[in-house]
Length: 357
Image (cartoon, rainbow, N blue to C red; front, side, top):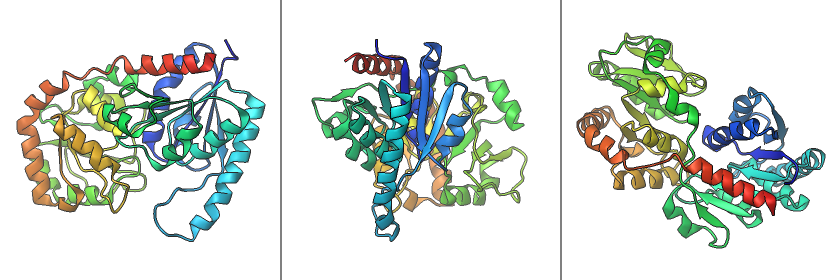
């Protein structure tokens, strides 16, 4: 066995960190030295820095834009600086394996790993590979897929379907603790609203405009995103948070229905926990359309309902939530067919096999 040191990378959004959070406890238990390379001001630093036994290393990174911007001129130089910084970290820390969850911060890390001849395993959560992973895949030893359909878009010699990696802690949440945390009672079903780690202004505004009508049916836990809590909206049965971390497992346990973006990690967590979901994917104007494809896949399998952001209005929201509540029993029965408990073990096994070579 090579030295017991593993390096993780991934960031930009919580979705590029969550799988790493699911894997890190295993390596902590096995006595590994654990390093994490992320950006200087991304959400990954907040999520990872609080973990004991994990050394966080911030590096310079560019943003992989799909639109014209003067910042695009600077970004290649930022990436090159990040490659040099990551290579120095690897030279000093000497990891035997690198696990990349994607996001723009992972590109210089994977390039540096190639220069240092350190094997890389990449995990792709979405139905189709993101731009960062498209750049990184040629330099990786293995690339793992969450959706079985993703295998069509990956090189056959290094791709493997593993399914969704779900954090163990989410299965031990307590409904009573979640209700107590939010200050809610159990006499109405709880609707959890999540707009992604950055929040969604459109979802937030529509929910608040519909609040009185929504509260006739639901208690609401609204995770708004950073700096998006609006203190002028105070109602009995409605609570707002920028972000929930430690208590999230209990919030999920208290949730009867969820209104969410369609990021892969989040929707697979709802699926594993059998929470009926209404998905409002990021529009193609604001993204490459990956969430739209994710959502369509879940609708096809009868795991979710979807409302396109362009069609989001007070009336459409109320209609879709009414439909969600009506069809929830059928949706939950369908969800029971999905099994996720072996995915983490498959990922750990593959990392171990690559590490030994």
